[in-house]
Length: 301
Length: 194
Image (cartoon, rainbow over all chains, first blue to last red):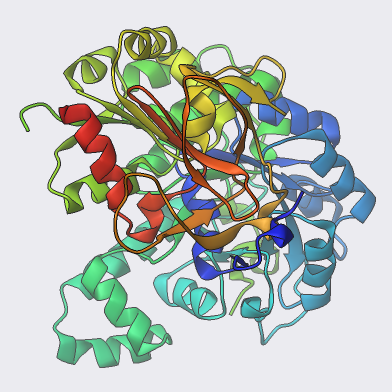
């Protein structure tokens, strides 16, 4: 049964879009490429799964144009789990987003991990009932995405590397810029809005509340329980783990350990306990070894 | 009030519940340990993912203690995933899923479908005076079976049950903590203080 039987109800509102991300707080969202992996993620305690054909590490290794996943694959994952299912559309590719919405995914990630379809515009996300999450490397980028209708932000990090240094840079940048805004007088916020390339009203709101109006997760390079806890201690609302789980030696154990670490992020003795005997972490690539054209975080405008 | 209300802080929107309590001048603490639980006069179980909350409650050695505390009369209030955690029977759960129980009801997870079917609507709520309650249903559960001792507190216009109370336990399908609605929290606080 759907709510079509409740005549006065309204769907697709900013409140319910942002609200779903609020419910995921303190949780881990895991990249999965098969229904079996989705089950493993759900059993390990993921709050949601990201359905995609290739994890970022493979996209990186194989190269070529990377696109929305096959609807059959997304359907199989939707049918295999009861937790929310997210899927990725290319930046600016609003038709991929329309297709994903029609499949009934719970969230769309307009993602720099796929090849961008538009080097100028992002998707006008207000045109959709399904909520969107978008990546950001700084506050201005986050605010532009929110202005376009994003209901959740994730700092970008550098996907598919297993190197947490970019995720660190992005969350520190965003949090630092929010603190800077809070310290400004009303008079100074006009210039701040200009510099952030973001609407004044939103800038003023953030200066007043000291936080984004939507949930902010961290993504890109999280590979260990310690990485997840690090991001939580820096103020993330939750974490995305992409290649880090299913590219590791023991995905089941690692998934469970990262879920625990995300909740017990302030307890080093628990973090030590869950870090034991996980087998090999994904091999990874140092971001500093990546030539500029292969840095995914630079996609998005 | 001397002792605070505990908000289960394993996963989900526990901060919003604490803000709602603060807005009505009620002290709260985050519950992650047995000692937090023992300091609490009542327990709020927030929205989130019920499957995750169960696993984390077990991992924190809180699952059985909370179950026992509810059985011995500790007042509790669950929203959305929290309602699922309070239900004696869960429909469409994952293998091995169980809640703390205490409410003699059967609750169906994701009863409205996927996120596209999440919605806002105005509702009447028993023992809440004044204008209708504005409610946000986010991948929400519904109560499909209501036991003899359970009082129905709220229904959708099509008759489906979205709010129940049994003794000291209150469970609802929606999220007053995200809409600025404080009256249901006030009702719960009055149950705790009684």
